Image 1 (tube, one colour):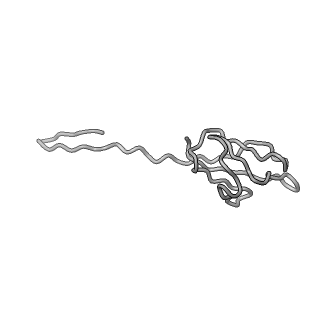
Image 2 (cartoon, rainbow, N blue to C red):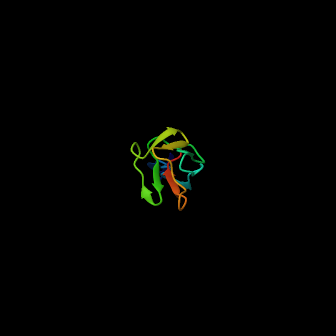
Amino acid sequence: MVTFNSNGISFTIASVLPAQDPVEEILTGVIDGVNKIFTTANNFKGGSTKVFKNGLKQVLGVHYTETDTNEITFVDAPDAIGFEDILIINYKRG
């Protein structure tokens, strides 16, 4: 907060922090049709994750759960048959 006083007139400017940009990264973990647990490089705020599997948005609580502050667990293990699933996550740092 900064206060200015000029010619007998005072005014205060409150500082506003910029909104935190979401982080986007590829999830880390073995894609083999068995492993369901994947991690992020940073901790995330609970409920802020948006996961995409091959470009399709996955639903929190239906397709995956947040099992730790930097870990998600899929209901069905991502697959590597034919081609390896691509797993992208967006989140706000925790």
